[in-house]
Image (cartoon, rainbow, N blue to C red; front, side, top):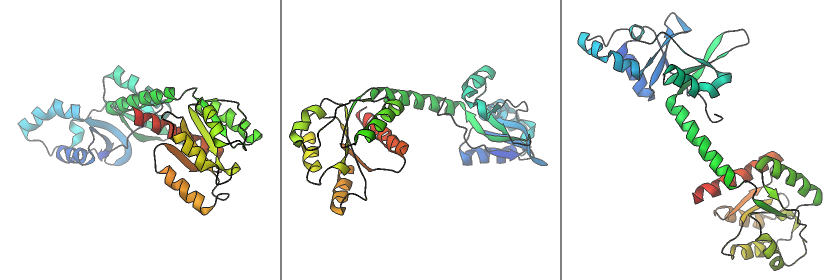
Amino acid sequence: MENLSPSPAISVPSDTTIRETLRVMREHNVGSVLVNNYQHPHNLVGIFTERDLLKWVGEIEKHGSWDTAIATIMTKKIISLSLLEIDRAPEVMVEHNIRHLPIVYETEIGHSHVAGVVSMRDAFRSLIAEKREKAVTTQYLNKRTLMLGHGAREREVQKKLLEQYLDLQVINEDFSQSVDPGKLIPSILTGDLFILDLDHFAASFWPLLLKRILDEKVHPHVFVVYDPVLQEAKSVQALKQLSKGSVIHVFPKPVNLLEYLRQIEKALKSDVKSLS
């Protein structure tokens, strides 16, 4: 599970009372705490969970032993998993019939440390997130993508990255930059995505083109990119206004091209989720 990560581990010394341990669990809203040797804080000696409480609550009530040390009722047999194998956490929890699994890692000098705890709830959340991620990804897989305003070399590089990184289908159509905006519309409307680089056009060109696209009842996702240094202040202000809407995604070009692709991916996912 790619989205699975351990939650912070909450621990108490082994001489902590049952009453105080439950207070710590309520305070941190957790279903388990790790128990450390009170004389050696880094030495993990047990785990106490809600299941342990249910098992022992009758005896505790009967003998009034809420101020007894948590070490007397904790689970001493600790099942843990290496941080490098965290994707196996659901399998291990099912195999051993447990709901909380400490995740550990070893330092360079061989000392074992707790990285966190994975609960069954964490595993379910990760599974749901993974399914949603896949559902979103498949909805823009192989979408026809057209680009306008990119130089030949730049278009070739971006085409390769868009196809490899986002699984988009970039159409090799060489738009004429001097053509009337109205004549571009039919070609643009054949795509699912339209990426417009403003830096190759006069300030009088792109507002008309975008207006014509938005006037259509059905149009592709529109991504507008620009270099803030090359654009006039009033153009940048107009772009910021455009970016406040959900129809067009506008963002300045980052120095890192991979970050630019991530911004496109993020915008695509937000569009898909807003429709679902």
